[in-house]
Length: 308
Image 1 (tube, one colour):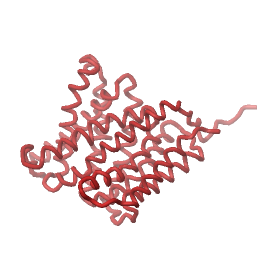
Image 2 (cartoon, one colour):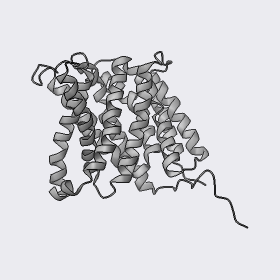
Image 3 (cartoon, rainbow, N blue to C red):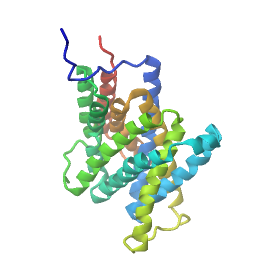
Image 4 (cartoon, rainbow, N blue to C red):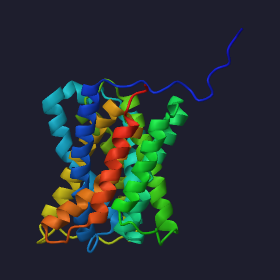
């Protein structure tokens, strides 16, 4: 008797413990680096147009990553890379996606964006279900729910007040970022993590750079302040190198070990890391964010437990 195919798709194959440890460690480090960019972005948005800021961020990140890639993998890796595909993936996911996220923060506020970004694990899970036909285990579903709830608590614990254009941009950015992370690991298996990071961020730079040039020539946006303006260079370096180049490198390495769905759970701990950075700068400790981070961490553990 011929059996019908499983409509839920193939089960997720458990990964080796060492691979899980490496992947989760890389994800934590990536989110710490990414979190450092939120205070820097808030400061820079006071004087920078969002489009010019994201363009400068990508330009600095790519300018730092290209010589590192050449030193680590040699110039042939750079020459032989699939730049066309990198431009498509990077432009859509990390160019348009990053711009939409920054616009959402400018239209609303960091808390609203962080609460909506708590749904990133759902977006990443949908991506894996669509493109990999993955089956969801009960442990993964419980872990996913814990991640979303914990992320919302860590982001502020309150409801999202602005469900207009800014919220829609944040949701779109979540799906674009999740798809781009998955596509980068799939489409560039022969590249090292630094190569994957560079080629896709370069695509993002080409996308937003063309828009920025057109907007500047037409006078739609104001010229950015000079890099040597007091108080500008250091936040921009943190925002470009730490929160983008380093964070994206660590993130893609984590996705390669965990998959985009599980790795995305760590995104919801980012508000807690932001709070730790602000505490170091004099802000008060938030138990709500600490509890939310603990719930997300428990969700990460539950979701990665292999089938009995």
